[in-house]
Length: 117
Image: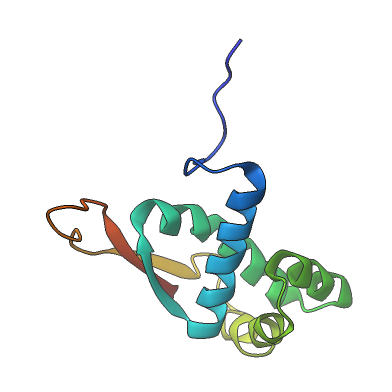
C-alpha cells in the first residue's frame, strides 16, 4: 500500500534531500538571506526554526547537534554567537519567506527569498 510521504521530496533520494537542506541552511546562516525556489524555502523554514531555537539554549549538546545538522564550524559559530542571542526574547518566527516573480518563459518555477526576521 502506498503511503504519502511527509514533506516534499524534490524528486531526490533521501540523502540528496538532506544534503540540499543542509547546504541551504549553511548558506542562510552565513549570508542571512538567500534566493531559492519557493518550495525549497518553505521546506527549509522549519529546519532553520529548530536550529535557531537550539542556538538560543547555547549548551554544548545543542552546539554539537547544530554542528551535525549544518556540517560547518563557521556556520555553527555564527549561529550560536550572533543569530541565537538576537532572538533570545522571541518565541518562534525567526525566518520569513518573501515570494518573487517567476524566472521567465522557459522556466516557470516560483522563486522566493528566505531571510532572518
